[in-house]
Image (cartoon, rainbow, N blue to C red; front, side, top):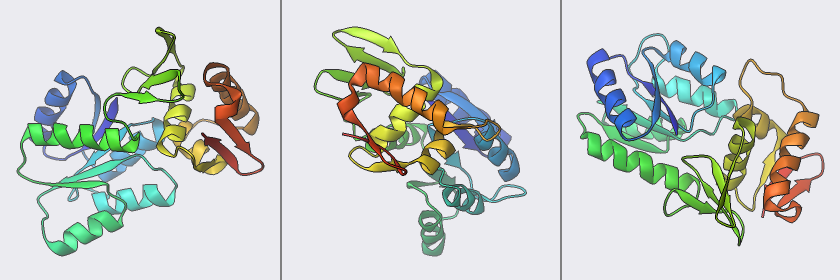
Length: 218
């Protein structure tokens, strides 16, 4: 799972980065809000860990901008700001969780894993897609008849997005924002190709097309 970590304290950033890497995560560090924003638009992340008081663009404004752009990547604020107004602003800007500094690395890991499981409505890293098909959210593999099926980047990002909103319609706009990178050109025809590939694995009846709006995983 890929994490963007925004923290301008280099020592703390390195400590957290090393710890998360040891726990199996892929971590990209940013030291200013503008740098984090550039990384987020250039790549796809499974989670955002954001300090607030950072140079150029603070964490609150950064996340608010992302949410306005329909980027729904789960986010945790990690900050020394702990007043009620700060908590309110953090959650109002679109945060999913809030950790106060100083914090224990174990606590961070617990919260990251809990949020990832909640996002995918899972009890562990394996999610049931259909009666006979499971999906490993960490390895991005489908498991069918005890066989592992590797998905390409667009396919697993698309499936994760549909799983987050299972039984809900996910609009074309939201799909383009969360599956395609900022500098990539998306198209309805390419999206249809990825949907077609997923349907081959999970069954056409489980990915429903909502005419002129989007798709729904059922």
